[in-house]
Length: 212
Image (cartoon, rainbow, N blue to C red):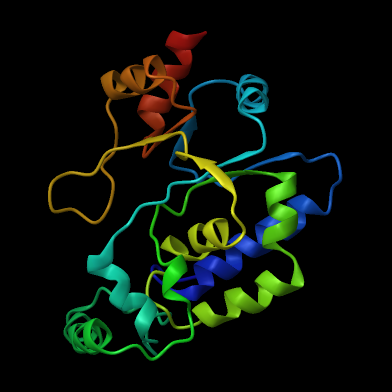
């Protein structure tokens, strides 16, 4: 699996398929080892049920990066996207995608958001249906497809959505989130976020000790 590549989407689908195969699973949270639940999953479920049938996914309008959706980049999933040569080559594709549209992705669905989300079983069933599997295949070789696929499906399927309930902090001009301090974790919890990202093992343990 490579940063910015379709392999991230494929891995997410594999996780969803595996979790969905168990009919007892009703709530699906995509998290990584750098994520920290700030409240129990039981509390999340109770709060979520109060919202009704909503998907917790971040959806934003970012016209400045929609060139990604207009052009396929053949090296987007080879693990080298951040290396200097491929960064320069990527600028050429960015230039072309900013002027011309080469894909069949409908512009009316264009949007952007964090790859980390929470969905209910009803949403996952729709994401995994045959129509959307075919739709997802259109994202092969789309740069950073993981920041567009599930957001665009949410719009396409008219999901009711709220934010992804995750506290994530980006330093200025950084493409990656910073590791959070204990103070930031407590702030996130006091502001009713469900998860915090990114958190190192030291602050995870400190937070857990204080919570217990």
